[in-house]
Figure 1 (cartoon, helix red, strand yellow):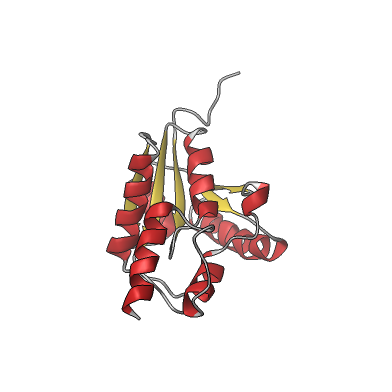
Figure 2 (cartoon, helix red, strand yellow):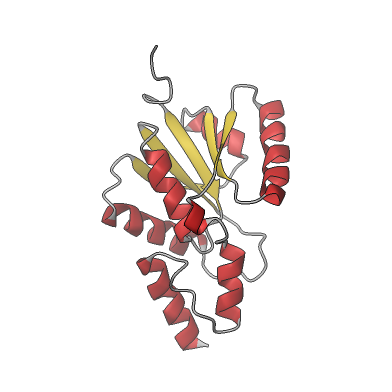
Length: 169
C-alpha cells in the first residue's frame, strides 16, 4: 500500500489574524503528513477588529516557519476562491482545523461548497492538540482589546508584534 498523502501538496487556508499556537500546531503537524504544505493567508479579513495587514500576517508566519525549520512549508497570499488557489498550486487537499462542534458545522458547509465547485478537492479536518483546543484568534483579539495577557496563546514573533500594537495604543 502506498502512502498517497506523501508526495502531495496540501493547503491550509485562513486569515491567521493573529496566528495562534493552535494554528502553528496544525501547521507543524500537517507538515509531517505532506511533502509540501502551503499556508494560504486570506488577503482580506471579514473578522471584526483585524489587527494586521495581509503582508504583516504573511511575514510573521514565514518567520515562525523559518525559525521552526519547516522546510516543506511555504506561505502564499490567498486572493481568490480557495478551489482556484488549490488548482493553481496543484493541490487537491485542504486542511482545516476544528476545535469545537460549531467549527465543524461551518467547516462542513465550506467543504461541501468547495467539493461542489471542484469535485477533486478533499477537505481534511484536524483537531488541535488538547492543550490548545480552546485557543482562537478571536479570543486573542479580545484579550488585546482589553489589555489581557495573550502571550501564552501566540508564537513569540506574534507576541512581539502584538506588544508593539499595545504600546502604540
